[in-house]
Length: 100
Image (cartoon, rainbow, N blue to C red; front, side, top):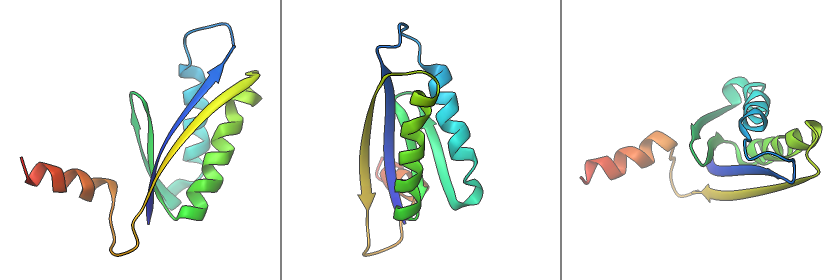
């Protein structure tokens, strides 16, 4: 299972607010149902699931601001693909909390 962090920012759309674009991206995420888990953060979204699935999903999410009228979109991805053992968003957070 892979974990990605994605941040999608529409540029040049005439407003500093982007929450309606983010909401559209989350609606795209919700279409995947139980195939992926996600957590919205103030600066992006964390998604876990099969790497091929979440990369395809990232592509679909990248298109959402264009569908809503944006002319330029900056998407940043960070991928954590650990193959020596199973991991999850919760496991990674728990590991840090256990050390506090």
